[in-house]
Amino acid sequence: MQGDMGVEEFSARIKKIGKLAETTPEQQREQFICDLNPMNQYNIWMMAKFNDTQDSITEVLAEAKKFTLSQKSAP
Image 1 (tube, helix red, strand yellow):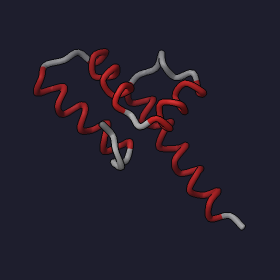
Image 2: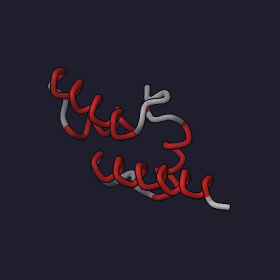
Image 3: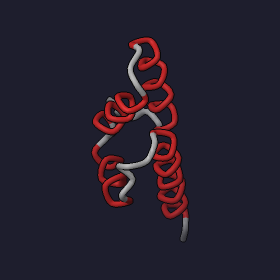
Image 4: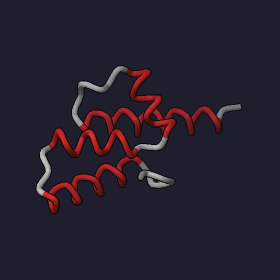
C-alpha cells in the first residue's frame, strides 16, 4: 500500500518488487493502481489514465501533487 509514501517512491518500490517476483509490466501496473491511496486512485479515474503505463500514471500523479501543493501556498 502507498500509505504516506510519495508516488515516485511507491512506483519504484512496485517495480523493484515486481522484478524480484518476475511479474509482467501489466501485472505491476495493476498492483500499482490497486495499492495507491484513495485520492490518487480517484485522480487516475478523473484523468482517464487507466490505459496508460505505470510511468505515465506516476508522472501525472506527481504533477497533480505539485499543483496541489502550489495552490496551498498561494495567497
